[in-house]
Length: 311
Image (cartoon, rainbow, N blue to C red; front, side, top):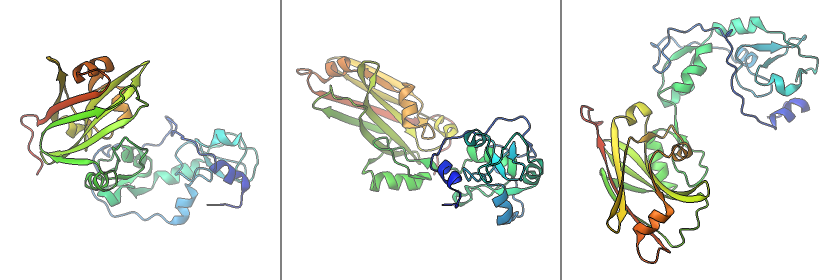
């Protein structure tokens, strides 16, 4: 949205990822609020749009948190954008200095606002300075699409993402907790970080993503298979899985715990948390003239004892 201020518009056209400062002077007025659970329901607090506008940084348009700075004319700016404006107020271009806007910081401390994931089911009301921390851990926050073959920006809850994977990415869907997949590639020397396969399994009332791909580990191409759980980490720990690959009388077996899709595909892959097969071993398993990859990966998923089924 254009502001009429070319300086601010130019700053906005150069977005940066800005971490909120870890400042000990942040007013924590809600330590009694659980970080992961919603607080008891309270009457919804309505904050006028004009007050919301006061707490909006004119450069990044995000909500401002202490320390909030102001120039001599009273124009405010968040601490994340302050280094970007080279000590000049983006509104009036006067020198910015290090003047804190303590009045606005105290006004913000009196607010209680709904979680931004209210539309996903979170009905909690949180103090202004606790809201951001809660939202970073909210159990209702949406998941990123787990498909690794493209930079997909779709987010949503698990049922929505399952439909998205099936309809938009044409991912294979299977019912059951066991699998037997065959992966074939005519030229195994072409790696190029290509994702080859994603299969979604439905079992125990949950969904799991089985990844199999090739990637470059240093100078050597390797293959990796791993499982991700479509849910949070605390639930993923209730399950286990095995993967098995072999040929010519040899066998490799991996046993692990599925990773939550909160962890990105790349994070899981780069932590080597799965069945890793060196290319020479994979070609040995494939048999023949070792010029074509033919791997059969089998496995199963189970629910740990004592964990009730999700119906």
